Image 1: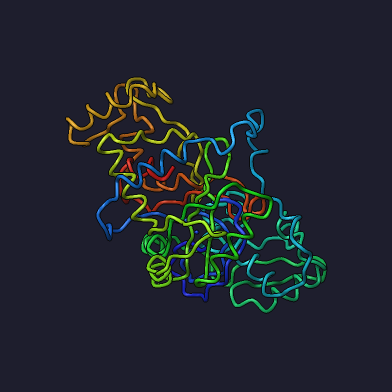
Image 2: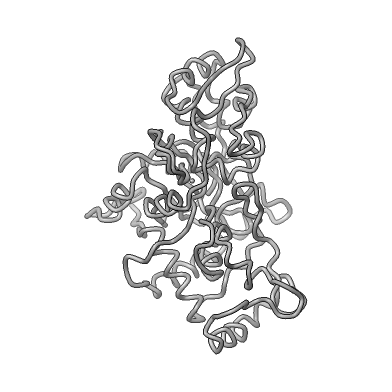
Length: 382
């Protein structure tokens, strides 16, 4: 999972991601968010398809099986289902992912531990404590594998090793755009099992080098059956979308399209009033800042708002040509509109603030490029 930075390292293969982004070209990806600054759409919006998909995504995967007391229990991901291994390639791929542009800027724990652009070294034992890393044994095998990495640097006395990137992370809007161009949206993976993250990763590696595989989840932390996948290059993403016949998942047909096209379709539906903007309260972490959660609307910066009134707000917005601070009102800048919508890092609503080690890829949305589009696109990513 790689983010888009202006670096030029060779990108690793796909690494874990427990839900839910780099452009170095980076290490492998696992799951992680993809930055979003969106270039112009390649095709006209397929509003009808997007609308149907949105309706399906809102249907509970299995209502009676949802744990409403603790949403964490709705995530089925369990790395203990994987066999223990000392495979140096898998070890490098996973650890490189944690430090990659695809994961680092959206992973609060890794960003704060490394200092982001400061590139501080991290204790290797801390990295090995991550859930997904516990399949890699013994510790000495991890050390040996990382010493051969072209992307990471290992130092320190035996048993006290630290690791950091050889080239520090640098923020780049162009890199984020490149990552978006190399990303696809795919739906049709059914219900989640303990090994779904790993199974889906293995599925996509057959079609090119993958930086990130992010399982998308709803507010109850239930898998939507769809994923965002970031390939190493835009060409690989385009080739995947153009496959004929299209690949299937366990004999089931898949909905496949470029991620940007998917986001553009949802944005268009929201603007036309055919789809209600997402109401997710997820807080999105990106490069040290947290966005989202506060969705004040109208006077007083009211958070949340009356869902049944969204069409009225839509009509007012349309009369105003969707200009200005749609959610400003009197009480300041509401999360839905005003200046809050201009900082496009909000567009990565599919990401969450969980540590990469928790889901190794759970960041269903990706950071957005700085000052790139409108608030509607942020809602579309949910």
